[in-house]
Length: 99
Image (tube, rainbow, N blue to C red; front, side):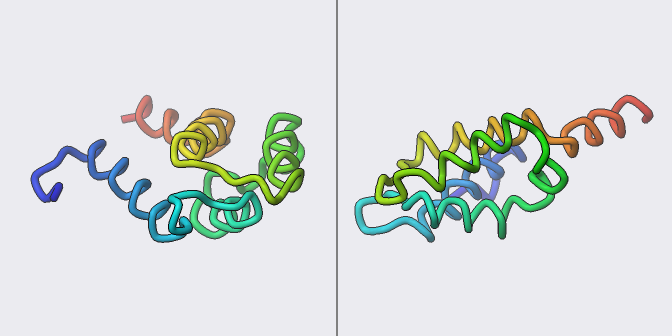
């Protein structure tokens, strides 16, 4: 559907597809599934963040009330939050400024 889409459109479409491929029939993910998905599919962004208080807060929230489920909107907010605090984001910014 997005063969002619922009890189940004394709990136968000990919995030939606990954979410939908792991979501239950109600289009939700359990917190434990969300944590597992982040650890397997978002590793480069979360790698090395273990000592950051905000990272610990986010990840520990996925351990609490594990029967609660996450919808797509909350999943995307989680991805954006982890991206913003990631060291990888700073590395990406540094590559752009050195070109």
